[in-house]
Length: 574
View 1 (cartoon, helix red, strand yellow):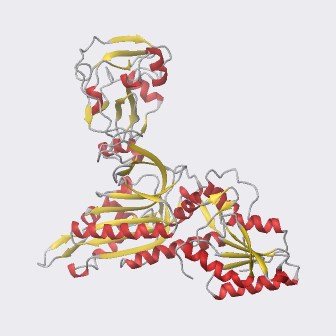
View 2 (cartoon, helix red, strand yellow; view 1 turned 30 degrees about the vertical axis):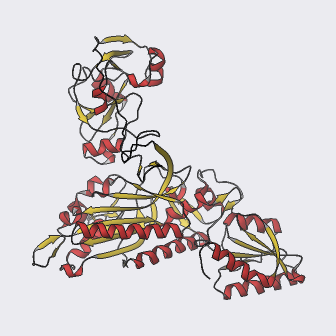
């Protein structure tokens, strides 16, 4: 491809909207353009990278016997209502009606649609197991789209669905998908970690997430350095313990705390550590007000609370000021469990029940109560674990200290069991002719997200550094002065020679200054650069591997051999 013909609208300035390196460089390198918030167009270079990632995914899916098809992005509401997710999925679902007032959605995922596809066609155990996948556009009306391709309202995804006779078969399909994903993300050059994840709106039992590591990753990961335990902070079990104290229960006492609301302010006022306090967090649930009590030195894990309440995420939010005043009788910052309104459902992390003589809000503006004890002074609904894990907590598997890291989710695998086959009545006939429910799995790879995740790991202050496996082009032949006949002649010769060997090559034949050409080559991240300049008449060129910086001069006839060496170093064949 001649760069004089390439649509590559690069930017010299960093767009003000860009926060992450991936967002910044995808925009600057002319690979994407924003249409509206959370919706992007993929320009030629960016689209080539997307197709490279898609092809890696296809190859690995095909290797485990998965078959590709393509389903509609428009889905009828009836199937979602049968599964119970039409309302549960929440405001992230784009809903619409046709001219006949029939309800549809733009598909955020396809469990119902795939189940409906096979349930009338798949009749016998002889047709199982079955593994189907598609690569398609998905839609989710994110409340706050951000970070470029990391959190979009429209995105490209590979979603696969497995169908098995029983739990054992489902587990084996799960393992196959796990291995395929490891191959996919390894071939994409990613440093990734597999962690336990929360099933959320997908339902089912086991789930794992494939996290591309990043210091600015969206998700926090808890992992153990002494065993293989790893989980998202939403899923991780918190092993923080408070031993039951045998100290005497003291008489509770109301204390004036004028305008002192936060744990930090209270610890300073009382001159005691935060573990002697209990936080009372007031939430508005689906149709009730909740008071959630946790130790003052810890943070609430809202996902664990949602699990306990068995409600979707959109049906839980922190109560507004008016609600807090109504149920506590006090301004924000002074809520507590004692004498709270009868309409409030009190939920208590179990560790609070082991605490003695702690301090809570007084349900009266500018007052707290000290020497409070569970059972004697208040009661509630006890939950085993409502806390967010933190670094240094004990590993639930081996007891060592947990470490924390950050990453971006690029893939997930779910064991759905019979959740959807139950709802949509998807059965097969076993060897005895008896109808049995199909066991399912759901497995996704974020194609566009993976592209962004690669850049998060492969960039410097000059631009992107693509691994060869996903680079839009493998090499660029930069003709320093396109007006010089000897330079253009040698550049064209190298371009044709490399292209004939299956190497994807750009030739920069633009009538631009050398500095502009080099800057663009580094920005768009082409792995190999061959510069043809003043020594063209001697058949000498400059050879540079992007990101390594070392520039070497070699004979033009040595270029192909050097390119092959670079391919070999990254485990690729030409």
